[in-house]
Length: 438
Image (cartoon, one colour):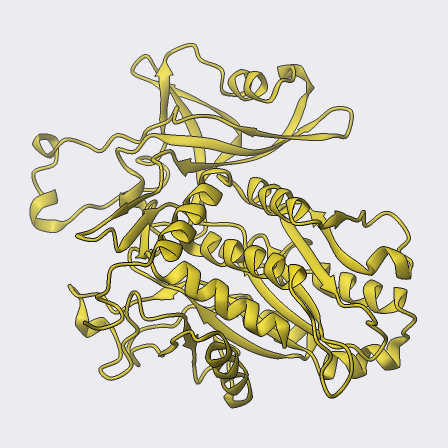
């Protein structure tokens, strides 16, 4: 029996179910960052605030810092100094969604609808006929923010085939303005009042919001031997979950010195806004990661010259889900390089540098996989198909570090409900842990 055909091990099954629990707790980027922080605190990590001054004692050991829907955490080994390099694993907390507009109250035919716009590049048809949660943050008049989430209150109903006979011949065409406004209930409901009640605040206190929709259906294992996991937001909470658990594992373990000195500082970054270009204060195109790296190095006693030396010897693993070869569309993939579900994380390679992976990075990731006993595979696009991108090239451009793009294989990417192999979340987690150890 091949590796991919084998029934998932109990540990792989447990990891996949834990990923499902992480997704359920993370219906928005803000919730994902908070859930990651909660798990890290359980593992012994301590929060730092960006508004405080950081001294050497503050950045030693296991720390994390939040910025909006993004999180950075690190584990500094004993003896870390101004010559200690970083090993970084990065991901993103956001996913394609429907995002509430500032004035979301709509209505027609004696029904209340919620005004939304399209966030990222969702497969719109997959959002039809699903009960959708609302989740995100509310900004209050006193300057504070609160997180909010609801159960599955919304639904975008599809037009019946009897009223659109051409759909079976010509396919479904959806206008994002006219056809994607969800129903909330009969006429008279107030969206903001519902959000305020769920958040435990008064409606009049709300002065701003960042609220998206998420599938309310619980993640589930399926298949003949439960070899698959179906869930919303696997792109890219599968990577966030892997790096959180990997960093906690590294922090708990022994960190033997290398020939060059102490083990590297193991660091994870989970950025927001990748699906819309990353050009925000908490996205990979913004200054968050560089800010933290500069401050950690300065707190250890370094200056700009020593920091640039450290950056040159540091390395980034950009973990973002990628495409498995689709059995119904084999012609959409490279004829030779065909990543498959259940066969481990893939190295994402692109000649136009839409992915940052190069030969040096390949060697580093292969070494990490071999150290962890994890299989790996490759991904390249079909030459006639445009290639996506992720935080890898952006991070490499900002920091100048060797950067490797990798990812767990998915089918149904950018659907409201995606799928992966049950075996793969554990394999990605193990590979990330081995990379962080250096």
